[in-house]
Length: 256
Ligand SMILES: *[C@@H]1O[C@H](CO)[C@@H](O)[C@H](O)[C@H]1NC(C)=O
Ligand SMILES: *[C@@H]1O[C@H](CO)[C@@H](O)[C@H](O)[C@H]1NC(C)=O
Ligand SMILES: *[C@@H]1O[C@H](CO)[C@@H](O)[C@H](O)[C@H]1NC(C)=O
Image (tube, rainbow, N blue to C red; front, side):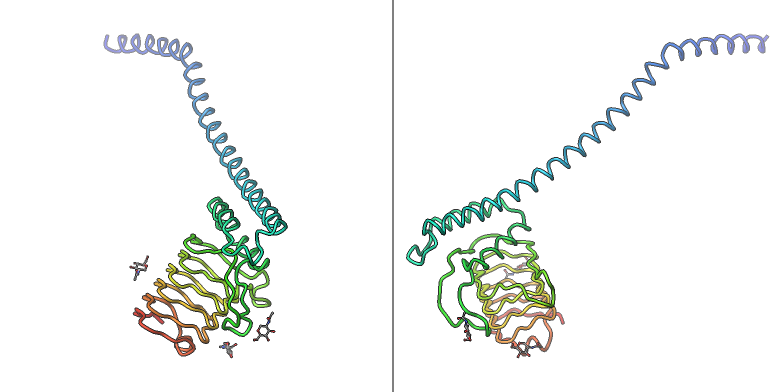
């Protein structure tokens, strides 16, 4: 009796289940499939959108950079960069507005362009210290260059020329200088925590009132460099480098 009931029960329920499955399975499967499909599509669409955005941003950066170069040539042609235009208010206002738009890669490109064009680092620092006294046409003060990477294209072969540039009051946290000639450069009043100087030349460079905590001077040449009123806590600086440079009122706690 129990057995029959069970079979009947099983029989009916199986039929029922079959019916339920047949009527419901397709929509359920469809729903699941659609859900998976649309999730995948969403992910794909999101990926595509992300890629498009990145491409668009790259293009925008390139366009901004090209426009900047063009406009600097125009400013030059119209005489806005002439000596008598000191303090070059228009050129500086334009540079500062453009600077806000650039990513770190283009900020570095622009610095190299400005140096090539002698709009920054105009003084002669070939032998280390400044031998002339010219103002930089483009002022970098109070701008952020955090995370910029300024590197020579040829490494040890040629140093990237950034001689005599006034990086006064700039923020250069985590910036990297690789094979750069920074002779006669001034970093006065700047924030350079965790900056890295690799294979660079810092002859006669000035660091007055600079936060250099965690800085790494690598194997750079610090002959004649002067550090005053600065925070060098946790900085990596060798005994040789300490002997090359001079120090005045600096926080050390130097790690070697
Ligand atoms: C830069 O200074 C050095 C040494 O004082 C000198 O030999 C060189 O001719 C100067 N270069 C320029 C471009 O003035
Ligand atoms: C220098 O910067 C570090 C890290 O940002 C900070 O902890 C430290 O207080 C700063 N030092 C000074 C003297 O402001
Ligand atoms: C550092 O530069 C000075 C001046 O150019 C040079 O005399 C000296 O040999 C250099 N030091 C090292 C370790 O390369």
